Amino acid sequence: NAGVTQTPKFQVLKTGQSMTLQCAQDMNHEYMSWYRQDPGMGLRLIHYSVGAGITDQGEVPNGYNVSRSTTEDFPLRLLSAAPSQTSVYFCASLKGQGVGGYTFGSGTRLTVV
Amino acid sequence: RKEVEQDPGPFNVPEGATVAFNCTYSNSASQSFFWYRQDCRKEPKLLMSVYSSGNEDGRFTAQLNRASQYISLLIRDSKLSDSATYLCVVNIYDDYKLSFGAGTTVTVRA
Image (cartoon, rainbow over all chains, first blue to last red; front, side, top):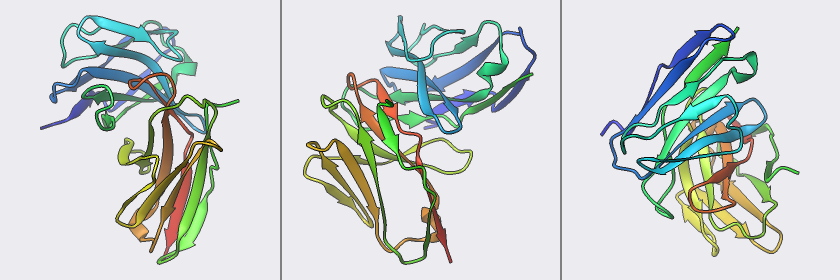
């Protein structure tokens, strides 16, 4: 199994541009989430989904959209990139409530100039 | 106040030494606790869950103190490969949403 696959691994955007970070998992996990990691701040939850067709906001949702049309895919869209969105983005999935820990993708390093 | 706080370190220890560090959490209703390991520029990986009675996994021992609202991680007989950042993770709201500490950096030297 590939686990959680994120693309791209690196991206440079200009302020105002939009883009989509892709996340796919092949483990039939119910729960998927997006985090951003900034130095000294730990991982912060952006958006999450408890199943296909269901999404909700996390701690820092502004400037980001998500959708979950299938169990496998959970893309994150940056609507109008800002330098404050320069970060490392991780997608994670979980099989179900109270079942083990999260599996993370390898991350996307985004720089907004 | 942050929901999960950790001493950032770094803890710089020789091979074979024992190193221990704590993490405090603010919400007394927290249900689940984990330690994750993150290598430089890599994704976090689950190291171990933390159970109320404490638990071991090889050279790693985790403890939970609900009364004082902290969890601890102890690494015995440290290896060079143990050098990493250790993330304390707590379920604050429900079993889906987790809160992460900023991490404790451990460096094991030869």
